[in-house]
Length: 317
Image (cartoon, rainbow, N blue to C red):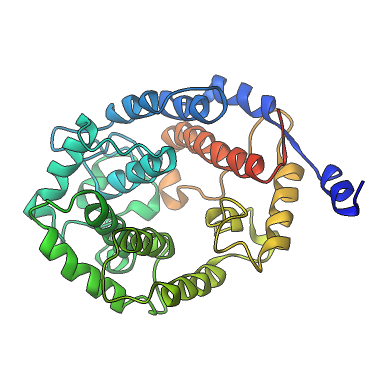
């Protein structure tokens, strides 16, 4: 046996059954459908059907789709959250009712682009984490990720949108800001989504090889490289590197292995991994709601981590 094979066989692994039992005991229908899709021969349609329970008449999403915000109204980040899941499961039937609603929501002129913001005033009427407190200054940074994600979807999947010409102008503005120092928490992922969409539709006027180099630089700056900081809020390799085929993997191989070891070492005996954030000052206002939200959030993060472990060969069946 080759030395590398011996090393691979000796790497720490996580028992999938341990996580599966916790998911079945604690997760929402949505996360359970996602678990079944990834690990139990479940269907994409079950995930989509679960998502539709959070969709409002205007086509947007609220109702606690993000566990950290219980706003019943449609919020832009609710749609962002859903588009990420639809990409994860590769569900692209644009004639499906869920997409009919999404298109309706995006086509609303009153939403574009000023309404594509991260925090909205009505959040204050419902339990939510402090980072969802309505804040215009905070929105000026964090809303960029929303803009990027929505533009990526419209560019690739909804070119017949009535706002498509305006979206092209917004894309140009967003791309002019690629090298800004402050991209916000969602900025790097948003640029990844947008540039990938631009490349797939062959939007002219851009050097995609150069853009990928810039994305790699942005991601490498975004990753927290000190494992001691990973239990607190910050971006780990797994937030960007989903497989060895990722353009972000070269140069980060050792850090990926470090995170895989970290996950194996920190999985609690009768639980899944804790989340790395809280509701901060809003915890005192909504202590019971946070306990519920925390469990929901642990479920979706556990699925992300289990996927990461499986794709890098660190999961026991």
